[in-house]
Image (cartoon, rainbow, N blue to C red; front, side, top):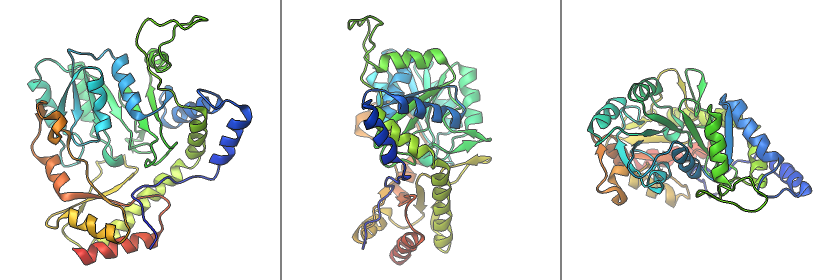
Length: 365
């Protein structure tokens, strides 16, 4: 049987045309017309005033911390239930992470967040929240806490492009926001990211740092450390083509989630990741937990059927890298990790693919 992947790239059909235009112009790298267009597309779509196309979302988070002057003696709060790329930039800056567990939404708990702020050795400088699997955090409460405490809010929207809360787009709530265009994301440029903010001076500083912090001289002059973090014109051309079908991709991802719900509703022990009130998740991945069954057994069975699936993220506070890191947790994300899994959710998969997967799950359970 054909391989069903977890979340493979899904091209619009315009990518090769736009790449051909890049080659005809000979603006292959580092910048060019399509980089500008891609940044404009993200600005227009999200409603954020300024955008910077970069090599990855991890690079974007690194620049966000650098621009906000997060350094060696600083503490940064972060969602524990996330991917390592969401928190590794804290270490790049020599700062110290403090991990905060999830609540019933699977996203960061505002209650535990307040507890973590009180438990911190000194007031944290920033908070990185992750909109997990394309579902929005409780941003009303989180933003109020950050405002009251004077803490910068960085919104890790790597998985949530196209999601929204109170009619406002993911990535537009924090002081700075970050998107990912990795190969498995809802919009892919094969690899890449975007940093967004309403603060022009922050984006301009990040732009300067992303091109090796080269001073405005004819020769190469440098006064501070910079990075090679810019997106190429070729990859941006792919992004422009992908933006043209983004809403279609979100609609299909949400439809896939609904199909799984309908197919598996007779299995009482399966629980789907919830959505908070007045939010619209992009359902990047359809994710579930089991009350009794072992998800590893389901994953292994699906693999024998040539179907890729994966466990949920292993929380950061359980990673060996962070053995001695301060965390405020109540076991929620650990339980989700032990009981949950990600189902194949590619926007190009067919309804029959979903039926095939659900049959296997029903038989195994």
